[in-house]
Every structure is written in structure tokens, then in C-alpha cells.
Image 1 (cartoon, rainbow, N blue to C red):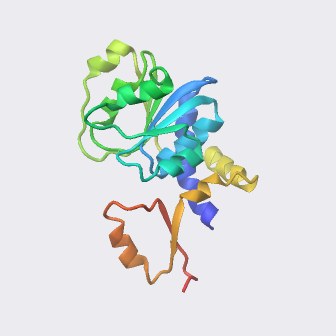
Image 2 (image 1 turned 135 degrees about the vertical axis):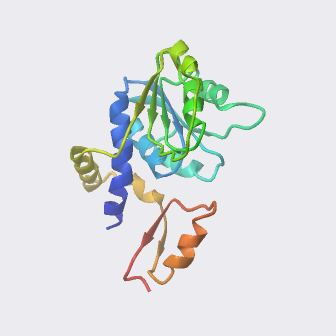
Length: 205
């Protein structure tokens, strides 16, 4: 059941990485280390990426990102912006940037980070008005693709990969709770925490 619950975010990540059509050895930046960002990291590692850098606003998910295939994890600060950090670690600007956090201004940040004629794949689900300067993307001839969900073939492929024993994504399950504990835990998840995927087990007492 837990593997089944992980198939959906893993399939979303697979869909985005498939759209990117990674060339062997591609330099990759993944913005966001939630379930979708971790899934994108997992599939980028297995579908052609060379070096992968993951980033988030804190180091809470660094171990998870590395477990899923990231070579490095960076947190930008006032002294050094993300494009500089990523390029330093990758030894050049990324060929592909996956925006997986869905926060305002991250598409603009991805355009800033990606190499000329590179690809930005938007997997994040931003629900507020956002903006970026089209000239910044035009000047670099950036290709921007927005990805949504997955296909049945991708969903089935993830299940088959789990069935074959590739179960690294299980590390995303950071807690298992009973139905009785659900209201309290749900409220706690409204705030920042160390949780990634919390599984509800109705038979857990």
C-alpha cells in the first residue's frame, strides 16, 4: 500500500523528465525537494543525467535528495544566488532546470539559471499570478515546457520499477500514523516540518 501511495508523485516526476528528453551526461538543476522534486531527481539520474544539483530553501531534505540521486544540494543565500551556486557545482550552467516547487518567481529563477538554448520544465503547481521577463528567455533561446500529471503508461512503469526492487523512494515516507492521529498531524503539516510523506494506516493503533 505504501508503494502504491508513492506511485502518483513518482509518475509526475517521470512525466517531467520524459518531456526533457535528457541527453547522456546532461547537467541538471532541480528546484524544490518535495515529493515531485525528489521524483524528478530519481528519474533524471536513471534517464541520462550526468551531474544533478538539487536546491531548496533549507537543508531539511538534503539527505533525501542525495538518496534519490542528487550529487549535490545547495541553498542560496544573500551572498550567492542560485545561478552562481548551480553553475559552480555543475561546472557550467545546467542544460535542464526542473522547477518543482510551484512558488512565485521560480520560473524566472529557472530561466536565469539555465544555459543558453537550455530547457526549463515546470512541474511546480503555482496557483497565484506570476511573472517573468520574456526577453530573458528569448535572449537565451530557452525552451519552457509545462508538465501536468502523467500518462497511464508512465504510471504503470513506476509500479513495475517498484516491483523490480527499485524502492529508493520509500525513504520519502517519514511517518506512519493512525486515523486517530490524523487531525493533529494534518494541522502540524500546515507549518514547516521535517516530514515528506506521511502515510495513514487505518489498522495502526
